[in-house]
Amino acid sequence: MQNPCKNGGECENTRDGYFYRCEVGFAAKTCETKLPISSTILSKDESYVSHLFHFLGPAVGNGSPWKLCYRASLHGWDAFTFHSLCDGKKNTVTVIESNHYVFGGYTDVPWGSTTNHGGYRYTDKAFIYSLRNEEGIRPIKGMVKDPPQAIYVNPSYGPTFGGGHDIYIADNANGNGNSYTRIGISYDAPTGVKEQITIVRFTPDEVEVFYLL
Image (cartoon, rainbow, N blue to C red; front, side, top):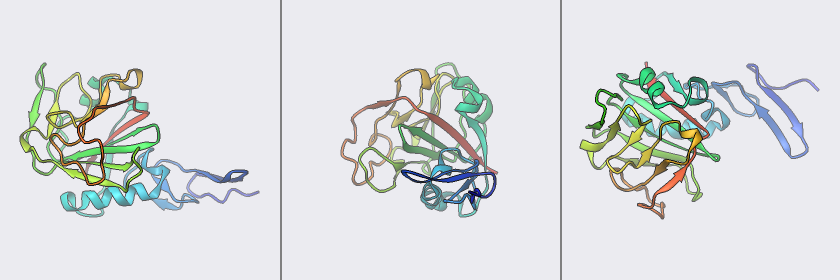
């Protein structure tokens, strides 16, 4: 049977239903849709992209092109590598996948690692989001409510949002369970989130960071 997928994707009918694997940057059942962001995570479901860009719209507008600066599976899981590739870039969006759950955050102020002990950076435009979550609720967005502690920068930390580390990615995160979420401290806890302050530890399967061109 001829492969119906386009743009280098693989499609086939299986016993459990239709199976497709698209190249990075394409989505939909026959991989015909070119995405405005070349994410291995978001390429798995076209709805992820539409929801995320709906969240990003008030901050950066629609149709803005995004470029990869860091992908853990490609560049390595060391926090230093993340900083060496992404520090100084304004308008970044972090996309995290863990156990099929997809979430992350946006900040208009750049990441950095100028001090050994780290520090907080101010912005009132940052937000965190969830596109697929354990509680099974719709895609959600939580705006920063403590702007002086919107993001935390430290050379030993991956992307970290909030004074209470509402989202924290640990150094070499794929080899430990030190990363966690603790929603509702520096960011609004979206309606429907039951456990707002409880620490939920996880080991990410992938972390990507993109910046606005």
